[in-house]
Image (tube, rainbow, N blue to C red; front, side, top):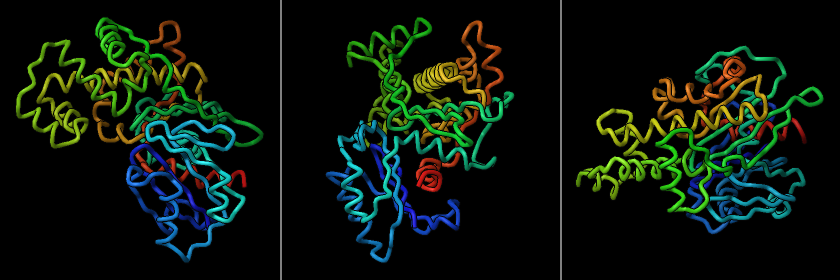
Length: 326
């Protein structure tokens, strides 16, 4: 049996797969709130105590943060996780920590057409490089290269590179966030926190007087969900502009990564945000920004661009890793 995990700053999803049965349907799948536990070891022990009859042979976990020498740090949670400790708890030597975008990349290799929405069909080159971006709690980036008969995923912390404004509004956004945060990475713009950051900027930039009814909703509901709802409905111009800036910046950074790794096999957009605002992605903001690379516009037109609809891609990828490399 394989234990796979997708560990984020908000929740941890654990699943058990039977290797011979494939990865479409796990035997067990459970989502736990990360913030209810002091560390991942306590969360894992809680999960195992609920399923004591399990006999785990292999385990792999996608983690939302960097991994160095078998030690993972979840950037937006403060957890540290050691492979050696996990091997003791699970009583198996076959344990691997992966960056969450690394595990999502391996999951992409198993996705079907129904799991994807195509924004640009392009002209994919077989065994070409693949770029992967995912905005959720943070912004993750990775890529896949063909190596010795199979794809190898390469993790990165590309979401933390400097945000690059491309027009007057984005330059003012950079100034606004710079005064607030100091360093402004793409993650501060293209992520859940980015939606709130952009909204606060647009509100000030447009001298918008927020109605009391909206302020009350922000107090009682998730502000990002409220901004997204009103922006998608087109009932609030500030929320709508917020989403347009968000998606435009997302497209620009997707194009940046596509050029850096020459992703001739495709660019895949994951994370929890994109499927929720899919209709916005189908408008021009994302692809216009993706293609707006001067002399390389015709190169980028040939790169397929697809949105991942299957929210278990990282979980599937973590399990798939054990099949490929253990």
